[in-house]
Each structure stands twice: as C-alpha cells, then as structure tokens.
Image (cartoon, rainbow, N blue to C red; front, top):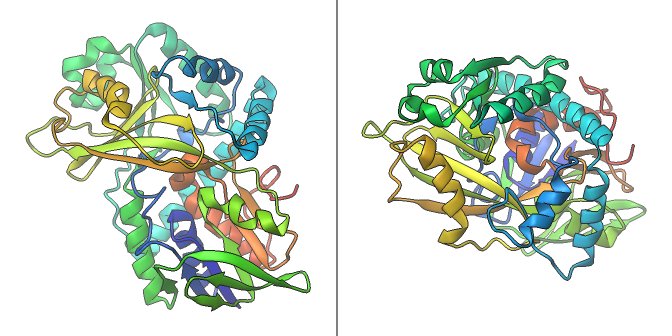
Length: 415
C-alpha cells in the first residue's frame, strides 16, 4: 500500500517507521527543512509513564483563574477572541472531575507503558542513539506535606503496574549526588526506576535516517494546503509543491491537525498549549543531575542530555502564539537553580517555546475518520515523546486491519 504521513515530528517519523516495517511504500510530508523542528525539538526529554496523570483535574480550574492575575502559575490562561479556544476550554473544564481524571490517567498510563516497551524494540532493532538514560526518574517534593500527597496520588498508577519507591532526602542524595548541596530544600522523592529520558529530537533525526535507508521518502520544505475529495475519499493532498496521492493518509501534524481537517467536517478537539524550555551547557565543570527529574511543587522538569541541561515548564493556553521573552523563563530557572546551583552554565541560555497538541482528556486520537482512507495519530499533548512508538504501532495495526496490543477504549477518534 502507498501511504502518506503528514508531519515529521516524533509521531510522524515513528509512524513512518512502523509502516515501512510492515512493507508499505511511505512518503512523509513536512514543511520544515528536517525532522523534529517544532514540538519534538526542545521538549522535556522525559519518557515518563510514572508521570502519566491527566492535566484536567479538579484543582486546575482554580489555577487557571489565578493565572489571570499572576504570572507564576504552572498553568496559565490567556484569554483569546477565538471560538475554537472557548469550545476547547469548555470541554477541558468538563474533564476536570475526580472520576474523569482517574479514568483519563489510567488510559494515559496504559498507552505510555505500552509505548515505552515499543521504544525499546525500535532502539534494539536500529541502534538509535539519543542521549538516553535508563536508570529512572525522580519526582521531587519540597515539603513532607506535598510528598505525602504525591505518594498518595501515585497510588493510582502503582495499582496499574507502575514501579515506584519513596525516598527521603538522604536516599535522594545517595541516588543522585547532584542534590548534596540542596538536600535541605527537599523532603524526599518518588523514584520510578523504569522511567527514562533522552533527546527526542536526536532520536527522531536518527530514526528518520533509518527510515530513509528502508525506503521512506521525505518531502521536506513542503507545506500542506488542503485536501481534494472524491467519492468520500481523500483523492490527493495539495501542497505548495504540487499534489501528492496515496492509498492511505495519516494525519500526524500535532497542534495543526484540527485546523487542516476542519474544512472536511472533521472535528478534532485539539488545541495548542504552549510550553517553554531552556537549554544550557552542562559539562565536567558543572554538577549535573544523574537522572531526569520533576520539581513537583513548581512543576518544573529538567534532564541531562549529553553535555546539556534542559529545563521545561509551564502550560500556557494562548492559542497559536509561539513568541517568548527572557522574563517568561524567570520562575522556572529560579526553581531549578535553587535545587541545582551548579547544574549548568546559567549565563549561556538557549530559549525555546513550542505548541503541545492537547486534547481535553489528555490522550490522543487514533483510527480512521469520516473519510476511510484518512487516519489520525495526533493529539499527544505534553507526552508525545513518551507515547510516540506505541502510537505508531497502534496506527500501523489499525491500517492493516489488526487489533492493537492494547485496549483503545477512549482513544479512538470516534468511540
């Protein structure tokens, strides 16, 4: 079968890999000049089933309300004169109940755990390098009160099979000596030994190279404009470089997916949520963390990627705005510097922002649409790196008419 994959982020490239592995002829269309140039480029780098909690929870509406008056909130709401924004926000608030948060988190964890398994198989088959660290992740808490709440919160995923240990501050330092100078600023941590980290951009670039060696064609610098329809099927994909035809098309355009298919009458409840990251040099002169971690009290994540330290934070509901200013990073840098004063070169900072393709429930959409030759694999939110390899295998199985290895209840485009 001839298949077009729209988008060369980590979702699109992993999908192309699974499809060519199944024997299909695959072409990937990407508007940038290479793979993983947008959302997959500067993300947190955490492969974290142990952090697979739904963002929509009972406490989030009040955080969003406070963010209208304060700029130090982990979730920030920026009011927009955009009907799609208000419709999506209403659906998101509708998911902020205890019962729905519980259900969505379990679905999210199921997909993340499966995807991590698939990642190991992809790496073993292709020897893909991506600055991986496979010794676990730390979820740090500043006070005994927040640690106790975090341990209780984690029990949901533990009952679903997630491995975790609870560490006091001395055990944290024994596991990762980078916290020796700041151990009095933390009460302890939840340690998930099977979680991992790595550079999703480097992974995607190297996997794209492996895909090309298997025959996948990459059409970079090609902007998708619209679809041509005939007899209830997608006849072609029109781009600024002409038309592309295929038997099947996979939509993997992240935050831009919903806009592209809206003229077709396809309603994907996906909206961009902006995230911020900063990357700095971190070499033998610095005391970099051995493991990736999340400062849970401040919702700031950081990870060592080779000789760099990546810091990420904030979920800003601001539409398709990707602008950023140095002051947007002050709170997150203050938090990480408080824990890792010598973690990297804080005078040499590379700022970045991206748009996460969020669904109200926090899990992606899979499967065919109203047009039977158009499949979706999109809406992975802030965990696209963790979910990528499993999502790709699910998509390839659905295209082939096979039942995927995990239950897709709540994950199909139309359940």
